[in-house]
Structure formats: structure tokens, C-alpha cells
Length: 173
Image (tube, rainbow, N blue to C red; front, side, top):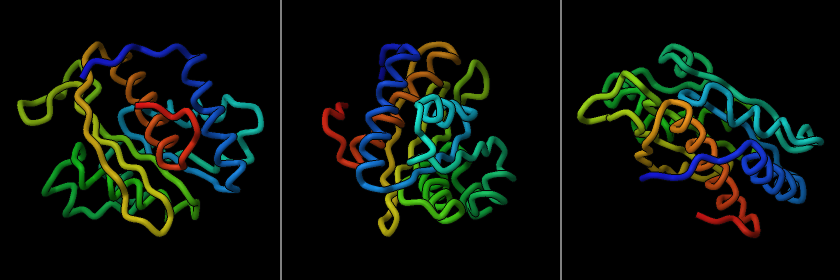
């Protein structure tokens, strides 16, 4: 799937709408990021007043960090790998528990330019979104472009999924 690269302003507009919605719902969120390296959290915290709805972000780049910080079971990582539906779901659920928040998003993927395989090509990103008390929702998207573009598109898709999860008005696919 090819999505356009989003400007910083576009990403921050999405984060602002997310913040307005979470603030109105009196909910807090956390991020669990691998391939984006904290970009989702950075976009959220660029919004003035984000401390009213953004709690924390976890950058869990290594498998060890995913296990230690988010409680991703080692057997999931061994059986399915870091870039998998199971890992994204476990990261999202783990962020809810570790941060004691209401909403989370998790991303894990192959941003490139190296590291891809036939089964998990460069540009493949798994997402997990979770509301406290519910099973995580997951989705895989195959992005195209260079490393920066894949990461940028991942941030936009993560924010879009969060907007849909919390029922924000004007959330679009």
C-alpha cells in the first residue's frame, strides 16, 4: 500500500484532534514503538497541552526491551518474530498495563533499507491499538518508499487508527 508522505503539520493536526478527543473523554494514552523510534510520541507531545492526555511513550526497539518493558512473552517473539501480529498485540496490551492508561498504540515493522525478507519485506508494519478492558485490534500495512517515508506513513496510520479507536470526528482511513 502506498500512502503519501505527511508533513509535520498534517501529523500534528491529527495528534491535535486525537488530544481533543482524549481530553474530552478524560482518557490518557501511551505508545509502544519499535520501527518509529518514538516519532508517534514526539508528534503527540508537540501539541501544547498534551500532558492532559498523553502519559508516556515506550521505545522498545530490541526484543529484550519488548519483553522487559512491555511484557511481550519470549515465546511470541521466538515463534512469530518481532514483526508480527502477535507481537504488535502484545506490545499494545503491555503498554496499557505498564503505563496504567486507557488507550495505546504499538508499531513494529521493517523500515529498511535492510532487514526485510520474503515473508517480512521492507515496508511491512504491524499495528496494535488497544482500549483498556478490550482485546487489541491489529492491522498490517505494506508501505513503500525509503526508510523515512515508511516511518512517516507508519506514524500517520498509527494516529488514524487511534482516532478511529476513540471515535474522533473526522477520523478517516
